[in-house]
Every structure is written in C-alpha cells, then in structure tokens.
Length: 64
Image (cartoon, rainbow, N blue to C red; front, side):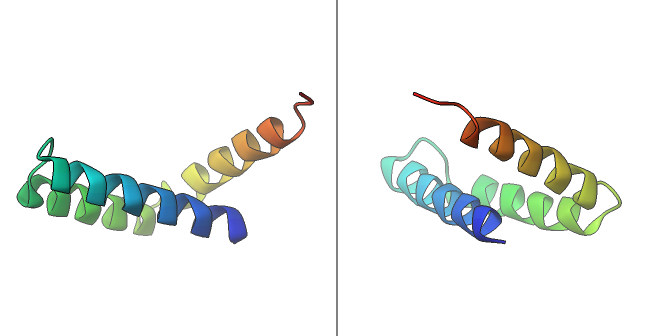
C-alpha cells in the first residue's frame, strides 16, 4: 500500500509539472488519468500491481 501511494503521489506531481510547463494539456491529462483509473479496475489491474510490486522489491534489494 505504501509503495502504490508513493507512486501515485510521484505521478501526480509529474502530471502537474507537465501541465504547468505546457508539455501536456489538461484534456489529454484527464484522458490519461481516466485510462489509468479504468485500467486499474479491469482484469489487468491485479497483474499490473503484482509486476510493479516485484519491480519495487527487486530495486529495494540492490545494494549501493
């Protein structure tokens, strides 16, 4: 839960910066957000979450 909340916050910040800088307009940003919302509620949602959690776990095991 903490990882997905962090990812949502990070993506929200990136989206706001992109809208403010003019690299993406509000309309396409809303479409992208709605696409993500409906994709998460589809049958692919749990699979996407599992893959992202496995990637996060792999990254956390890297020693610098």
